[in-house]
Amino acid sequence: MKKAIAAACILCLVPVLNGIETKITLYPFLLEGQLEHDLPDPFPELESLKLTTQRNVQEEIVKKAKTLEAQLLKRIFGQDEAVQETTNAILRFAAGVNDPSMPIACLLYCGPSGVGKTELAKQLSIELYGKSSHFFRINMSEYSEPHSISRLIGSPPGYVGYESGGGLSNRLRDNPYSVILLDEIEKAHPKILKLFMHIFDAGYFTSARGEDVDCRRAIFILTSNLASSEIADLHHAGMSNGEILEILKPFLMDALSPEMFNRLDCMVFSPLSDEIFEMLIKKLLNELKMRITQSKGIDIFFGQSIVDYLKGYSLDPKLGARPLKRIIEKELATVIARAILDNQFKKGDAVMCDYQAGNIQMEVILSEEKK
Image: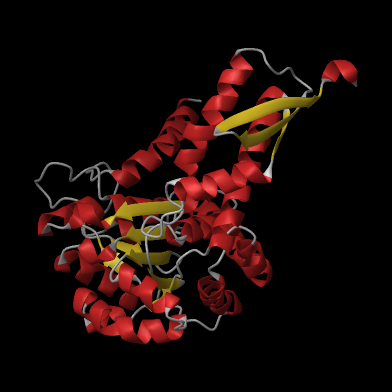
């Protein structure tokens, strides 16, 4: 019984021991000159479970690859070319024709702010893996100094934070199937860029502990706002995204280096048109409607006047759709929340919401009492 309890305790400590540099050994009776890695794994079932999980994830990616583009187009509006190029990279992995020594995909999204670059990366993670926990965003403006590399790969031995490891190395070790978003990559220090250039080329990097971190199952997406105003002007002049990319190449090569640029699949995101902006407003209004229905049991409808009001209030080519969600929460959701707290509506009511005479008007069109 005592031996069984001791074995169980060791099993529980394995995750801890894997993450901390330690002198404790699971083999207390090594012969002279014999190393631990010469002996069999004391817990082979753990490694087997890990491999089975990874194999299941890969099988799921293969299943979802055929319908991935159609699913993404339901959530990302006005960026059909970028969605198609992103899907093509996943299709190559699913078919097994990509280079197995490199990450699943290394993509560069260029375009103005608020046009869907980050949202496409998030939705890709959700569609492939079923949840957003596989999405990991790194703000590259926080890595403008050479010493900040320790936050990614860990601190050197003897320095504070050595035992905790690096954010990127820990993430990929714990969850190798991840979508890694490197936001505003042009703001990163050249030393950081060299790290990622090595990852994109070799499919791994060495952490501060000397461990090789496998990156071959990750999807790396870089975003850049370089020449965003020029992209908008060229797009309005009637140029295609392919033509715009050719003009952008010198700027991107200068910011990232030609070697880095040549390791990336680059795509241009278009500015949002009035039609696409209206589609985004209706999508967010529908999400608000669903939240109210689920939490309060109130069925709310939004008239076209609300859509027109929000479009005129928040349409800014320089900011794209980024302020839209905040404006809906501030201008519309707050008014609805006050009405609910004032007991103007009851569970089961149907409410019509319009914008009239400079104000948001709400009216109960069908009450639960009259049903």
